Length: 216
Image (tube, rainbow, N blue to C red; front, side):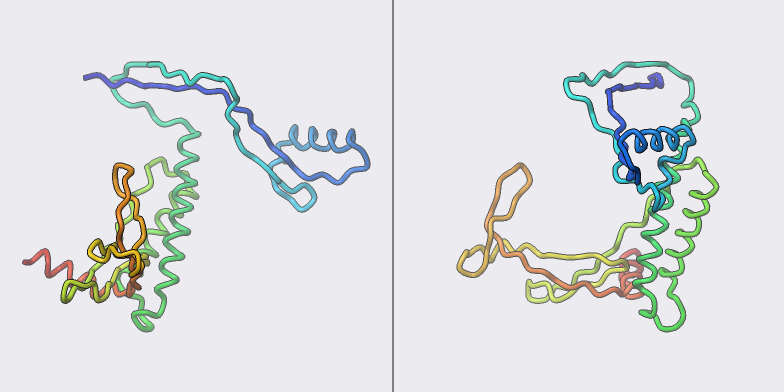
């Protein structure tokens, strides 16, 4: 099998709107043109706020795929891809810091191992975003959830990351008891009762359960 680079093209219109204080339409257009020429029209300043900046697909255009090259090894990604990765790394760093902050104090005055790992990962991602590191954003660890069941009913749940949890009880399928139509895979629906459960944020307990499972 060969390595092939597939490209698709589609026409877009880049539409940008900025706010401009002026005495006439002509003056506003001149200021916008001058800001564009100076490369400052996207600076989003109080004097010229950025109001809209997006790419809109043109109507009536056809999506076109084609093979543009067959290569022995993948080329270095374009600067546009590297910028997307920097943005993704920055957003993930912010998200991890928010999660770490939400866990502050749950393990006492000393941060827990999981909380510390979140901060360290956020720092690495932030450095990659600032330095323009070309590597892809590392996959974030998936949340681990421990669900306690007794007597056939969910009694509680714990997780090592903030998550939301609902339980679908297909045995409770009477409308008079609160059952509703729940969408299923394939587009069908069925009656079930949706029960919302709180999830305790307890990374140490969850880690202990995972350790016991791996040793079992």
